[in-house]
Image 1 (cartoon, rainbow, N blue to C red):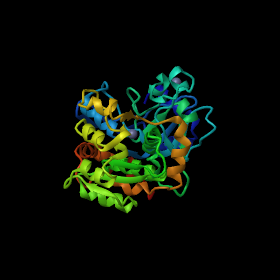
Image 2: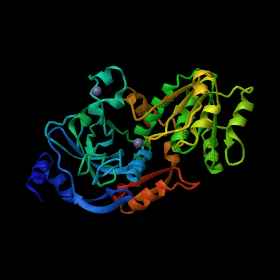
Image 3: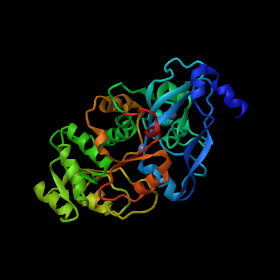
Image 4: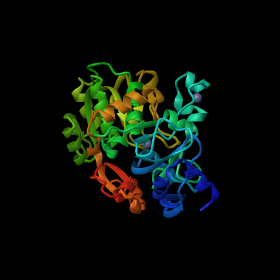
Amino acid sequence: MTEGMALSRSAATEDERQTIPSTMKAAVYRGIDDVRLEEVPVPEIGPGEILVRVHTCGICGTDLKKIATGSHSAPRIFGHETSGVVASVGEGVRKFSVGDRVVVFHHIPCRECYYCRHKTFAQCATYKKVGCTAGFEPSGGGFAEYVRVMDWIVEKGTVRVPENVSFEQACFVEPVNTCIKGIQTLRLEAGETVLVIGQGPIGLILAVLARQSGASVITSDLYPARLTISKSFGLEHTIDASRGNTVQTIREKTDGRGADAVVLAVGGTSLIRPAMDACRPGGRVLLFAQTVRGEATIDPAAVCVDEKTLLGSYSASVELQEESVQFVMNREMDLERLISHRFPLLDSVEALNRAAHPQPDSMKIVIQPGSAWEGHQL
Ligand SMILES: [Zn+2]
Ligand SMILES: [Zn+2]
């Protein structure tokens, strides 16, 4: 054990200190498609910081993209949809104490720079600085037993989880935030028809939020099993894309016009053109899952002549933090039901593999270091 580690624990009482080991298991990204379960030091915390013992961390499409494309240097420990328990607090931390159940955002904008003043928070330099780490270059760190939460995240990006809310439900705060932001970008009006293409967990949350804003929602997916889940959330208008032509069906349902707004919640570029075709003249198309740079084919006249607007939305907004916390903690949607697979941390490599190669029955996949806890029930 290093001197620093001994120091970092000085804030905790004798009892608490004993419960935090010096090393832990973590899923370490070592290069493209190479994640290994390794033994790493438990991170040290400084003044104003907290150490969170991770219970549940959702696997996000962006984690998979980083692992598959090598967009970030190795080694790193990913995972940013993290809920858990405060295991120790650094000097001067007053907002939280050991034992608090929390969910943490991994980045928070400065709210002062040019981009923040123009409300494009995801472009802020401070926002891009990740404030949660389980070691190596800060990258979220949720795929580990413990995560160090830095001071500005403790202040502005750590949220208490009420007693009656599970860690599984709580870990959706960040994805829900990104979805609320996406739906707000569309500026839906009551009575508008929205097509949500893709009914994975994110597409489903987007569809529920669109309906909440008064729109009439139609969902589509290639997997009928997913549409069954959508229906169980009250989204009864579905298009089975494995059997019919989505563009044609949506036109038939809208007097030949197309949807007022289309949300593309499937990655890749092949559905951009159909998404635009399914949109009415003057309507809006939101690209929500196109996170890989490259080129795509669009019909320029669809934008110029038909006046269709192509929109994008990425990442969470600090201004929607409260709203997303309310949505999740008030259980406006039973988000736990979106979880199809739960893996203990020891099987995190398999979990990531599974998430990278979704099957018809895969929805949200989570890694749960907390499954090894004694008496864990939430
Ligand atoms: Zn995410
Ligand atoms: Zn900023």
